[in-house]
Amino acid sequence: MADAPPVARADAWRTLASGLGQTLVTVGVVLLLYVVYQLWVTDLFTARDQDRLADRLRTEWTAAPPAGDPAPVPAPPAPVAVGRPYVVLHVPRLGEDWSRVVLEGTTEDQLSQGPGHYAGTAAPGERGNAAFAGHRVGRGSPFLDLDALRPGDPVVVETADGWFTYRVLGDPVTGDVTADPSGIPGVQVVAPSQTEVIAPTPGDPEAGPTGAYLTLTTCHPRYSAQQRLVVHAVLDGPGVTREQAPDGPPALTEG
Image (tube, rainbow, N blue to C red):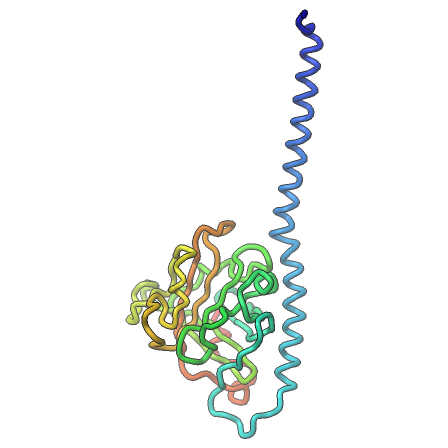
């Protein structure tokens, strides 16, 4: 059988190259649209969810019957079912008005709407470790700049009764996140399997609660889930009630 003439072979190669080029362009467009969806479109959905959750939480808080005489300190928030709004996080270092409604639970159903409280960890304001997770990129990117936190920075948890202020562990003078007397680092990067970071005493799963801690976790580095960025903080005093500080504690303005 005679070989195909050179012109026919050239046409075949051009057809193949054209088809391959069109396929690569299509794949590139699909990938670009996926990135746009993950980085920007999901942010719009989460912002809408946060507005809805904030309205729902404020309504529930104002509708709650008064508990009698005002308490000298706020009570830790009562448990709620997984998926329900729980508390509001304020992190002044991340922005003057940075706040996010936290849901109970840390599955994607919850984290797609905002940060989540690890079920089974302590309630804010009580001994143990109140632990929270949030997306680094996409879904509102609540913990995008979590690595900006420094020793001594406040993390304020707002509840129905008032506010609890936590301080990032470490040495506020030198900025050394490893120099806290508790031995617990203020900021660390760990493997996803190192769940001891949300133990009652962070880093020591065999110990009971030795203080009132707060832990924030997110993916690390940005655009990757290979590791976890973790911030540990400790409760700074007993908290203040809404009667004592209607506009919140002074820590809210430390950003």
